[in-house]
Amino acid sequence: MSWTALVPLKHRIERKSRLAGSMAADARALLSECMFDHVIGVLGTTPAIRRIVLLSPAAPENWPHDWIRDERRGLNAELAAFQSAERASDLLIIHADLPLLARADVEALLDAAVRTGTAIAPDRHDRGTNALACRAGMVVEPRFGPDSFALHRRSVPEGAIIRREGLALDVDTPEDLELVEAAPRWRIPGGDR
Ligand SMILES: Nc1nc2c(ncn2[C@@H]2O[C@H](COP(=O)(O)OP(=O)(O)OP(=O)(O)O)[C@@H](O)[C@H]2O)c(=O)[nH]1
Ligand SMILES: C[C@H](OP(=O)(O)O)C(=O)O
Image (cartoon, rainbow, N blue to C red; front, side):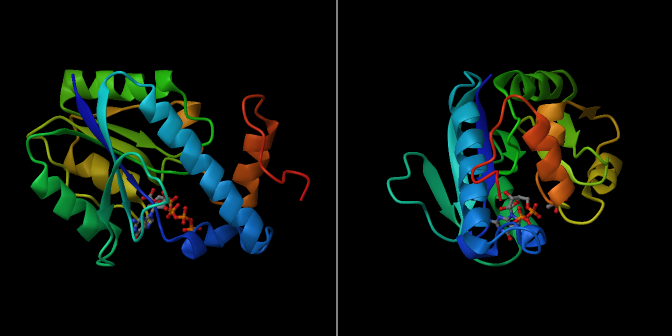
């Protein structure tokens, strides 16, 4: 199997706005950078992933993978445009803020998608969607945003649901950060805020 992994990433100064009350802007930027690097590193060591594509308003300096410019149409419109250009690809959409993500998590998601056509990884509250894997020809309309898990699940009820800590713990709130800090595998940059 040979997957394309698409990682959406907001502009640097727009990221992690829900942490603004508890973290300074430079610490938030560093945190988001480290989580992004981690996710890209995991994807890069997953043999089933052939291609990594970053969707963002600007490419990081010396970015070694593919890059698609975010034209500011909104996340779902940007993702839908990519999907229609890549109909022949097995496509994984995965968020950049998963600090506990491990290769086994990605492989579990992709293996499930191979079996059922699609696989969804909800966040730890079963509200958001942190990753969505679709075999070629199994396009799921992207409905990221509030209650995206229920919306995605409704559009592919036969799809697999994969709940694993590395996929479920995205960092949106100070409580998420505390959970990550308590995990042995990750050290929050500037963690002694
Ligand atoms: N390119 C792109 N990426 C986005 C957009 N909206 C969200 N993302 C990315 O999608 C993933 C999940 O986004 P959120 O958790 O909603 O956003 P966030 O910036 O991480 O956090 P908040 O600012 O607190 O909402 C992250 O990797 C974001 O950077 C968008 O409009 N364009
Ligand atoms: C984009 C959104 O991410 P959250 O804001 O829930 O982290 C989602 O999971 O659909």
